[in-house]
Image 1 (cartoon, rainbow, N blue to C red):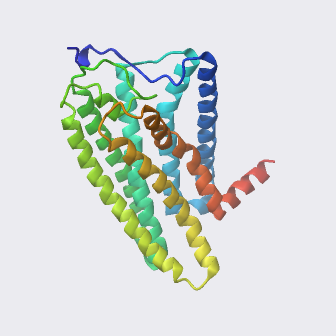
Image 2 (cartoon, helix red, strand yellow):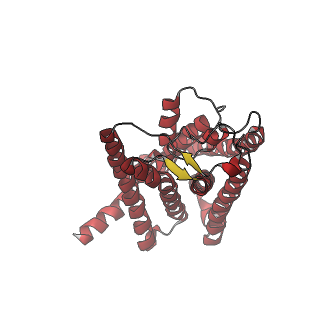
Image 3 (tube, rainbow, N blue to C red):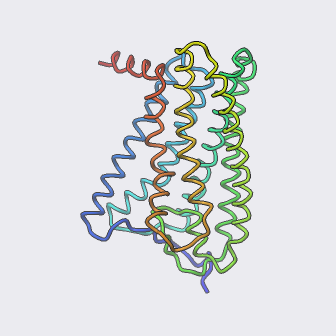
Length: 307
């Protein structure tokens, strides 16, 4: 039986057999990728260049934009190249790199979303302590912890996954290298070690999720008691985008990674993979800019100044 050392490349899932549909997928992914680059790049530029946006909330939003750019850049360029050149192959080293960076960016983003929930909790429920609890040093440490936890998680799962013997060929039923699909290629029961690591990560994810839910229960309790309608609107405008991003991110990630590897419903797996790896980086800037009046005002001023 061949093992992982004898596999020199993997074959990714082809979206279509006909040349016309391949070019259509390329054009669609190119449009989504450019939208993600534009939206997240705009947030990076606006937050970095406007000093009155140098607050904890926008500092974390800047980090989120960086992670979104990294996440979508890990999967889409290779998928676009394969569609354009009618090629399914990705090298073994390329697959390892793709898994490492994808798990890194996804893990770091989830940790950052937890930190952002804490930021909103302190800002709304304990506003008098906001400056002392979320100073520049504390924000930098929390952001570094989010990035660091994502990296350690990525190294753990990548090393675990690619140390398994691969006995089921090299065809990956996904348009990028994804851990559940790699596990399908391993020998029978050999993937239990990685599943154990996944259970550990899921436990941490669940703890973060509980923290986010409890934070927002406290936030909504305080917001609904606010006497000012303007104050309630401002609080909701900063919380609802974050809550929407968390809901999309967590639901699709859990659906993709909590299933036992199987060949059932491949189209559903493909849709879910697009939802968690492609859609959030593209729509997150839109979600935040639509509900955040301060960010919209700054962006509109920038465009007015340019014109």
